[in-house]
Image 1 (cartoon, rainbow, N blue to C red):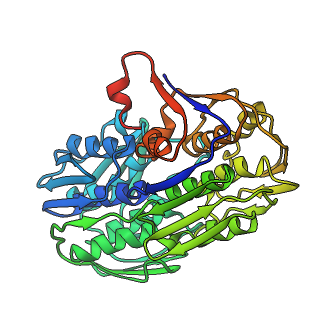
Image 2: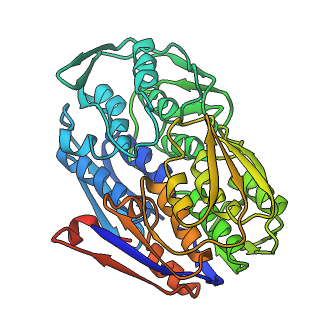
Image 3: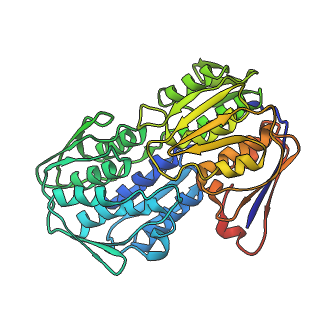
Length: 428
């Protein structure tokens, strides 16, 4: 069990280097299954989820290792057709391997995935996309079994612009015969990064970042070295932390174009946000102004940032409304914020936040990755010390060296791991 103790009434000041994007690195590492040879990736965050996908690649017979300083080396030759249950059920993103394995072997056997309990997030869109390319899909004893001697191009319409489904179809279509068109595709920056990696490896892809992506199948893909984009959610989290604590923080290594919605909402809340050539500076201002937020697929407000904004708005001067349209269970953190003195009530898929003058430190539980980040922000604002109990190590799944980065900004905190799981829990 991991516990983080944070002393409140902090004022964040200084510089922080933003790490590479977990959500971009995971599908890109899975996509290496499509090619033969050795790739070296840079700006890869050292996180539990990255460790898990590396273990997944190794279990499939691929040489993969984190070689330090943000670099991962992957060497691909032969690939096994079945992914291990204990890895796929640990992390939902492990399901990304299904399309590449199918393309390489004509057969993929993948357990149904696990991950954060923020909603059902069904894999049916992934499977419908593969079926549209000629794959046969069946469920058997908790496994998804997908078969196809050779995928063929086709039209794939996604009922919802799912990031994962868009990435699964895009990966599979790169080596299919003919042309594939994905309609109502996701537009997230992570989609563009995957497409750019595949293009660098020899794929023919047009329209990534728009609602229509066209992939012309090629015969082979070759190994390539590739840098991962910055993590826009980590950047947004530190921006909110600066705003919530009346801090002054300069973020280095960010992609400003990925953060427009977050920047706009922080300005509406009264913070000063300065975009500079080498990064973004955020200066928090009191009082915090209330906001109305509705989560939407990119370029709308990201669902992965609404919990952090809820912590900020818990002390706004007025009433705020956060409406969640992407995941149905994204408000599990509300009870924990209320334990700290927040005044939040739920109405369907909306949270109504009546701002309070002050939060107070309390023992709280991190129910998922972004909820853990929100509780950390609330702890920075609160009077006294907050104990965040993170039994599943959620926060370490998505934030590289968060403890050290917060300490570098002047935060007083400590990290405690009980039991014999320290090495397994990994970086934080």
